[in-house]
Figure 1: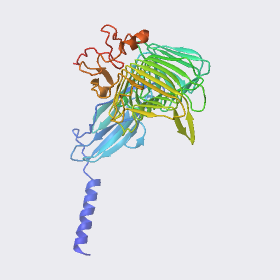
Figure 2: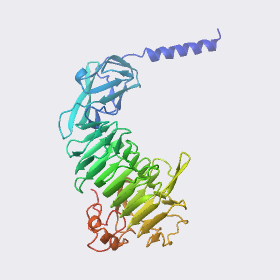
Figure 3: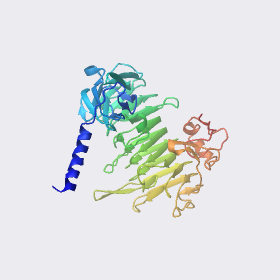
Figure 4: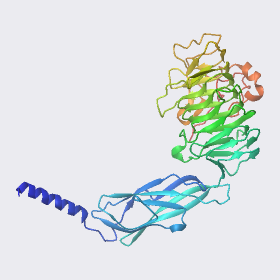
Amino acid sequence: MNKNVFFAIFFTTFAYLACNDEFILTDSSAKPEFSTDTVLFDTVFTDIGSYTLLFKVYNRENGSINISEISLAGGNNSQFRLNIDGFPGNDLKDKLLHSGDSLFIFAEVTVNPKDSESPFVVEDSIKFVTNGNTQFVQLRAWGQDVTLINGEIIQSAIWKKGKPYLVYNSMRIATGETLEMQAGTKVYFHDKSQLQVFGTLKTLGTLEEPVLLTSDKIDAMYKEAPGKWYGIIIVPESSGNELHNTVISNGTFGIQIGDLETPLLPDLTMHNVEIKNMSVAGIWANKANIKAYNAIVANCGISGIWIAAGGNYEFAHLTLVNYWRYTTRSKPSLVLSNSTDYNGTKYTSPLVAKFYNSVINGSSENEIGFSQFEATPFTALFESCAIKGNKELNILDETIFKSCFKSFDAKFNATDKNDYRILETSELKDKGNMEVVNQFLQLLTYDFKGISRVVDQKPDIGAHEYVEIKKEK
């Protein structure tokens, strides 16, 4: 045999044996280390399994160690479940870990109901026994009892604050029925779930206790994540919808309203409503009657407000902003159209859209777009508005724009935190028209946060009136 081949085989074999027959340390000082001492789950809703968290177990010794036992302390009665290095189960015996190696442990939890309105703690631990040492990694979850709505058709009902509602597999408000959500009501929606409104939806939040409609993924990593549920769908036969002091967040659509193929126009009134973090649009209107006062629509993947095929719209003191950061955005924050093509058919309907004392801003060069089918009426009016637009936007066309401007520094407090309060040096300050406030005095006397617009008789543009912002400590 060639001498070089012999030595190659010898050293390869030696290295293999050295790796696999590495000396196993038995001294009590030899034990594993962990990437964390506590695996912490944020709020987990009862009866609904959690997301999966993981941690790593390291061998940083100079030889192999044998972990004689890895087990869930609560055993089969535990609400937690484990997967140990790819093996599903809550215990594993004699796991050999070579020097420098590591293993993954995955944990999930399903929390049992406790008939409690307040969150409660669920705890367990994972036990590791190595060379006579017993070590623990703690498992902790915050549980929250919920009222589960699983694919239900809702008749007339009143939902109240206290125990949250969890919508699984969507829900529908039946035709002719009304669902009222009182102040402080919280509704969480599971993946792809919808709130379908065939009847009437009324949310009656207050400044102190708004109504919340959002995803059931509420831990810190998903706090601002879009696309985690579908959204609200208001069908043409629906009527009398009212949203007051309501937050809608983290879906695909905030509100999808109307239908291309029917002449019926559903109606919706919004007051102090915030729609944010939608993967497609905050409001997508095929044909509808919408009135909105002190509304905020922010950070949507395609457009904040897309009016696709006519209808009647009135927005006063709107803050429409788009600093979407997840993908490249090619459409403006606001799109107005009286026609749309769908599956080879053109749908048209007269459009009347009016905006007063509103700001339209974002990260794109141009944040407004028009699509007009000349054979169908198209009326758009902007009065005392700040609109970010490129050189093609003729802001001096007074048939559309009255006392508007497109070059401005909004100076929002913190766009990365969805905080669109304005600073004292904002060019939106004192630029609104007081006549607009007087026209809708009951709705616009106070801004989104309850700050008076009438004290100085110089309203600011947008949903927020300037007030000194205290610095966080």
